[in-house]
Picture 1 (cartoon, rainbow, N blue to C red):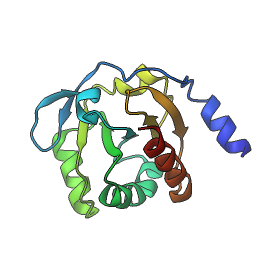
Picture 2 (spheres, helix red, strand yellow):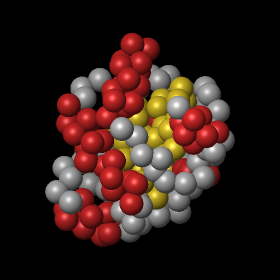
Picture 3 (cartoon, one colour):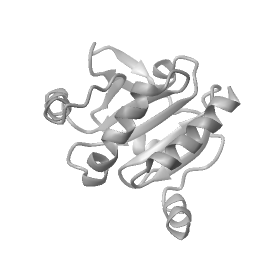
Length: 154
């Protein structure tokens, strides 16, 4: 519990902030899209990650499995600062069948939401308001609690 409070405080992430209006790039289509467009009017879990980040690599299989199961809440994966090729190679090498992977080549989303490191996981309600955030490796039980909360808020 102490770690959770310290990690949350370390992110400077406030409650009820709207999704930042940044332009990202869809990995599959190369289309330019905002985070709110990617959320498509549903609650969303947004993972800020990079392939070089050990803790990101640790939680990625759990998040990928959750994305495969989840039908109500969108799980969006926003890569921080890596090229299209590097992201594709990582996902292929790790056999991660992710959908909704977005590229943030300038790593602008982290600073826009007050994150000071990776991984950062953001939880947005159906209105696109930030309702929770987690800095560091997220475990499956904590993710499920937050998914349940997001489903209940829609």
